Length: 269
Image (cartoon, rainbow, N blue to C red; front, side):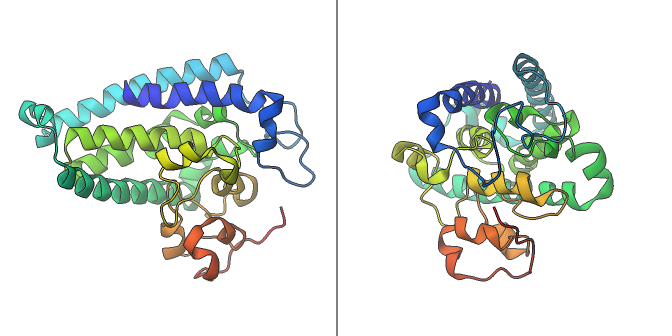
């Protein structure tokens, strides 16, 4: 339920939001790009399904993945799902420790799966390339991905993270509540610097290495199959493993004075 609402509600709301004329000044723009919406020549490499179809597909995929993920976690017999753990509210210290560990672990796993999806020919061609037919994302195109892509990039990191870290279920729910809507925000096309202050606070936008829609928008528009700018929450993994593009250096807070470890794409926006 948390995963479903965390994806569908922001998708529908933000898709409406960016289509209201007075709010479109908040969108990321590129020289030579005419529009971010369907019908623009640089929005996609191919046809994206209609909005109702995308919403229907999203709900179906999330339902299947949520049930399947819950079944996998249940069969792993993790202590986090013991009735006693479900009833126990973690203290502040425990919550902060487990949340921090899960945050870093899940974010790394999302980066790792994303990296493999670009580097491995089979995964790129048969799993991830469909999603990259969207060159200028909007919130609803978050769901424009193959089922395998949604399972690998959207579900497996949470399942593996829970199996490894075994956090309190309340910490697990908090991570879902933060990470899942962030998938939509990353595809929203809304300039990070123009997000309301409250959104930045709730989305932990003050964290070092924190990235957002500008970072992922450039990934869609410029990276293609090239494995650059892959981070979901943080640019730290891209910097650490040499997949941070030169252009993205401007979006990564404390990294603005650092050179990337490896030379990658530098294309004018």
